[in-house]
Image (cartoon, rainbow, N blue to C red; front, side, top):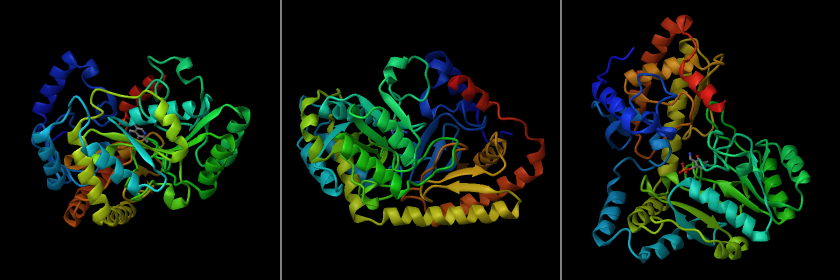
Length: 426
Ligand code: PMP
């Protein structure tokens, strides 16, 4: 169905195929997306993205989370540029590392200390080390299917990993205190940590908010076992709250992991901890060549200040709510049912009666032709840079996509991309 120019993207893909395994890797590879999704982009500003062929999109993926205040946010970029003129990756950390730790710890109620790293997986893997160092125990309880990164202990696929890599990872069902308690009972006395994402936000599934009973059970169990409760706020951090996401529920973890949005796209992540975990955190050896780089720290300081001082959060909720209401009305008009789940500022949009995702794939593929970048399987993100005009323009595009879907729904076949996923899950 491709109508927009794609020649440059096609050429880059052909070149990439020769020098990058499989042409691209990881979550930004387009292998699981409809054929007309661009793989390569040339620039971005605010809530807009331009692909390598110059096609413009209103972007609802926000770089899979890092974009919170808009691509190229002037105040954040200026802070980074000023720091770059002074120095970035040096023989020792910059003085602003202390300022960043003070600022961050001051914003998160459970936190008394911070360690900075690069990616979310650094933070979650370090959380495990600290949880194990805390009392010398082994087992880590994780919700089945929850994403905590791409390291061998948590990679969603098995290729290249060993059963031994996750020998001490124990799975329970999210939002199910009984399943959590049953898992804990089997390993009582050997539980080092309990992981939980702030809400259930897995690909291809509806999103679910945590029940208070579940969050409380995770906290009580951790404290009973002298284990550390870890909230993985890497994706949802600062999108639900200006504090740790579970603090609004009255459940303060011992550790929380952060990444994605904390520097508006500059490469930095963090592990925050309470006093209980300080001693173990002081004993583990954790580091990386770029973990002390000052430019992302300057960007993080500027981002955290904007988080404290602006109404960005309320704005993303308003924009997300408007988008959700508009899509619901359109879907009804065209005779489709949408399942829009999770917080409106982090929406997951799936279709009713669409067990093999063919309706969803055809609809987002039509949206892309009309300049709106949605995901058919991953939760999305509103940003402080989405304006009312963007939502209106989006709804014009989605209306055309619903029209197209109504005409063609009956002739749609299975989604070939999902065969790739089946093969990967193996
Ligand atoms: N935890 C969660 C909840 C995530 O969403 C992600 C990234 N999608 C990670 C951990 C891993 O972060 P990174 O990709 O930066 O290693």
